[in-house]
Length: 320
Image (tube, rainbow, N blue to C red):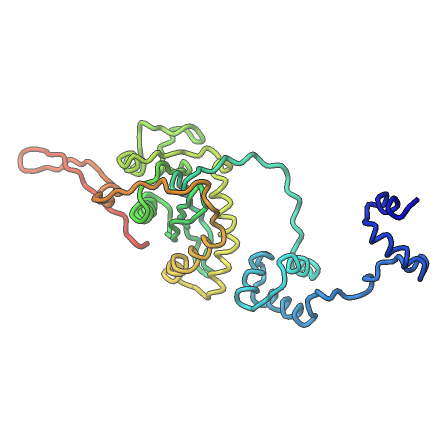
C-alpha cells in the first residue's frame, strides 16, 4: 500500500502520514503520541488573570450569566479572552451551572418585514429595584427588529400607563398598522375568563386605537407573545443586575437609567436588521394625540331646568 493510499484510508493528508512515518521510525509507538499532551497551551489564560476573573465574579458580578459577565469584562476591565473560555472557566469553578438540553419548541411566527408594522406592548411585575416593592415595567417593542421604543416603571399597569407608552411611541415615530397585546382588562372586555374578547364593547384603549386606525390584536396564550416573553426573561436577568450595579435605589433614578443608558445599550446589542428597508410607521402631522389617547366619558350634568350631556376627558400623567 502506498503512502497516498494509506493516508486516504485514514482520512488524513499524505503530508501528515509521511510525518507520522518519520516519527514512528525515530521513536516507535511513543513517537505517535500527541506531543501536546501534558503541555500547557500557549494560548491559555494566565493564572493570575484567571484568579482576577474569579474574584470579580464572586465579589461583584455574582449571578450574572456568562455572556452578560463577559460583556462587562471586555467593556469595563479590558479583558481580551473569549466568551467560551469564560463559560467553561466559571463552570469549572462551580460558579455557573451547565444549561439543560433544550427540548422541542413550537415553530416561531415569522416576523413582520418592516419596522413599525407590528408593535408588542406588555408588562411584567417584578422587584426591579433592590429594597423596593415590586413594580410593573411597561415595554413597547418592535416585532421586526426587537427594538425597544419605550420602557418605564409604574406602581400598577393600567389604562393610564398604556396611554403614556402609546403617547411616547406614536409621538416620536408615528402610527403603526397594528398593536399586539395580552387580554388584560384595560385592553379588552372578556366576558368569560379565557374566552374570546368582546369587540363590540371596546375599552378606552380599544376606542383610542380604533379612532387612530391601529389594529388591536389580542394574544390568546403566552406562547403567542413569545417575543415579549423572551424579552422579559432577558430583562429579569440583566436589568435587575444593571440597576444594582449602578447603585440605583429610587424609581426616579431608575427611570433615567432605563431611558438614557439601558435602552440604547440594549437596542445596540439585541436589535436585528429588518428584512426590508423602510418603515411602516405613518406620520400624523397636526394631530393632537393627547385629545385621543385619554379617558373619555359621557356624563349627564344638570344645568338650570334641563339636562345636557357633556364629554369629560382625563389624561395620563406624562413622564411616569
